[in-house]
Image 1 (tube, rainbow, N blue to C red):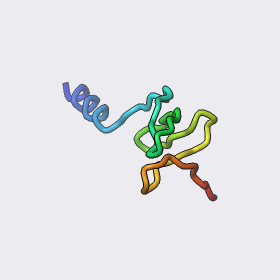
Image 2: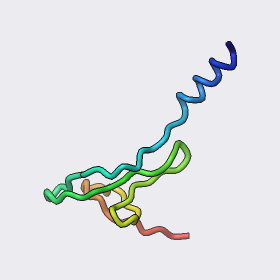
Image 3: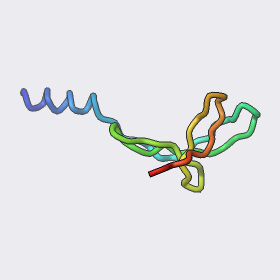
Image 4: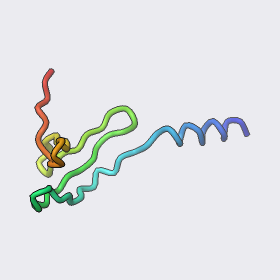
Length: 68
């Protein structure tokens, strides 16, 4: 019984992403297709070509400049 309780607690703190593309509307009315990738440790959004994007302060989805 204790093992089952521990197993259920672990499930509460983890999640799995569904990378199925979905539409979002930009503030100017343009529609783009984006996907969510990741887990509870690392995640990101990508455009339809696989480039990493993020929402800026104005509400637009923009490309991310990834630096090492």
